[in-house]
Length: 122
Image 1 (cartoon, helix red, strand yellow):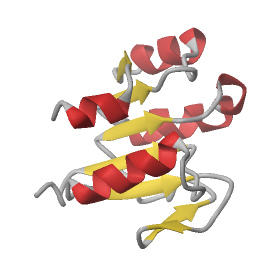
Image 2 (tube, one colour; image 1 turned 45 degrees about the vertical axis):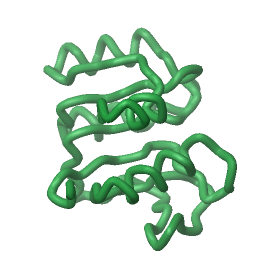
Image 3 (cartoon, one colour; image 1 turned 30 degrees about the vertical axis):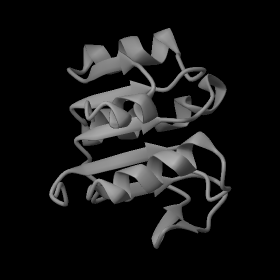
């Protein structure tokens, strides 16, 4: 199990069928400690969807499910909590945001986390 590995899903939605919802469910099934952050509230398989990033959050990886125009408000917080990786799902790519993360030593990847999980690469 991976319960010591903390992964944040930024742009999480409790609406079934959303890719972020599926990602949270698969991460839970793989045994990860999941922090779900999104505007919709609710919960996914017992994990609350929080409206903001908790101050004590220290995820190793962040999965980005926010459109580029909604990402900027999280830049300073991500730099502060300094995850090892931020994985931008298809449609969330934002080169300027990604460059800023890289400048602060955060590795950036553009990839589909759902496919990565199905291939046991996450």
